[in-house]
Length: 163
Image 1 (cartoon, rainbow, N blue to C red):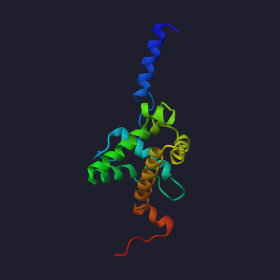
Image 2 (cartoon, rainbow, N blue to C red):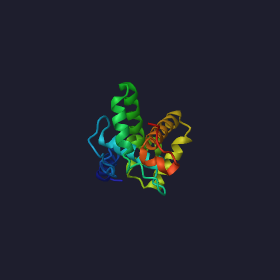
Image 3 (cartoon, rainbow, N blue to C red):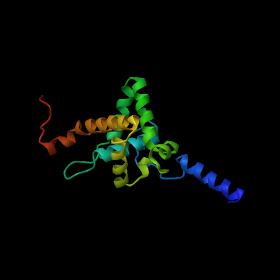
C-alpha cells in the first residue's frame, strides 16, 4: 500500500471512529436536554426502544419519551451516579469504544433494531463485568420508567394508584 493511500485510509477511519462519519442519531428529545448530551440521549433512546419496543396496544418507548424522562431524572440524581451512568451511555454509544468493546464502527443508535437487540443481549452475557453492569442498569432504568407511564397501565389491567 502506498503511503498516500495509507494516510487516506487512516483519515477515513479516524473520521468514522469519531462518530461523525457513520450513523447520525435518530432520536431527538421532545424538550430540551437537562443532563445528557445529544449523543448520549440518542444512545439511551435506542436502548429504551430495545428494552420496551412497541407491542400491540403498548406504546413504544419513543412515544412515551422514556429517554427524556430519564434525562430529567439524571439531572436530579446525585452528580457522581449520574456521571457514571452518562459514561455507561458513552460506552454503549460507539465511536472508538464501540470498536474496542463491540467490534463495530457504527453508533449504537444508528444500528437497525434487530442488530441493537442482538448487541444488547450480548452485553447481558458478556465476560466483562462492566458491560453486564451497564446492561443491567439501563435495562432496569428503562423498564421502570416505561412501566411508570400511565399510558402502559391499561394494557396490564392496572387502574392506577388509589386516590
